[in-house]
Length: 115
Image (cartoon, rainbow, N blue to C red):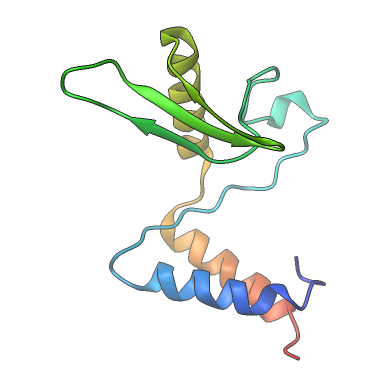
C-alpha cells in the first residue's frame, strides 16, 4: 500500500474512524499464504475471501453471512457456522492491539506521498 498514492485518503478516513470513540480497529499482521506455519485462516475454509458477519438470535440458531469474489451467501449449517466463528476467533487472536494497529496505520500513511 505504501506505493499506492490513491490509498492515502482512504487511510486517512480509516485513521479518523480509529481515533473516534465509536470504532475499535485492529489490523492483522501480514501473512504469507504460502507458509502454512503463518496462516491464520485454515486452508479450505469456504467463503472467507471477504467479510464475515455472525448473527446471533435469542430464539433461533446463529447464522453467518460471508462475501467472496463473485457474491455472498448466508450460512445456516451449524458446522459451517461453527467453522466461521472459529475463523473469526483466530483472526481476532492474531490481530494487533488497537494501539499497535494505530501505529501501523501511521507508519503506512507516512510512506504514502500526498498528491
